[in-house]
Image 1 (cartoon, rainbow, N blue to C red):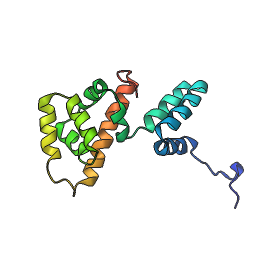
Image 2 (cartoon, rainbow, N blue to C red; image 1 turned 90 degrees about the horizontal axis):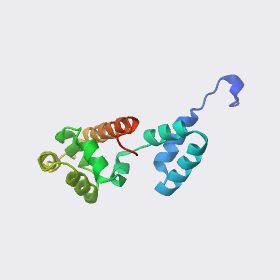
Image 3 (cartoon, rainbow, N blue to C red; image 1 turned 180 degrees about the horizontal axis):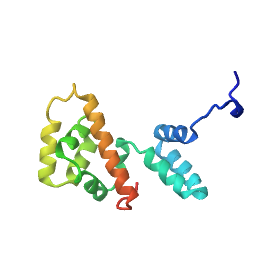
Image 4 (cartoon, helix red, strand yellow; image 1 turned 60 degrees about the horizontal axis):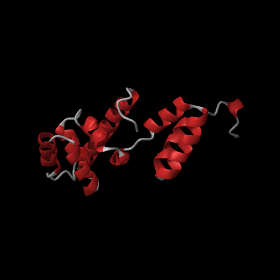
Length: 141
């Protein structure tokens, strides 16, 4: 069986590009998105948003992190930060109010090794908040 368009085989090119972007290093990702933006700015923005991962948030300015994390429950912040490098934890916690940071730190300080799925969902929730703020032009990702 051949993979010809006449036989109804469909390949989701956009999803494949999103997956590629998630695995690319930052400079290659920026270059590819820049080239796409020259032809289709809307598509480039959508690809940028959909390929965003939690680890990409560390590159954002503290003001953007503050805006994103201030819209989250401290338990979600704590769960999301549990498995990330210490420098990202520090940047994120220093970007938010002391009270919120203390509550998130208390969650992070617990043994969450058996809650890996919840930690991943918390990270995804924060990424969705970031994408929502980006769509409303409150932050630039």
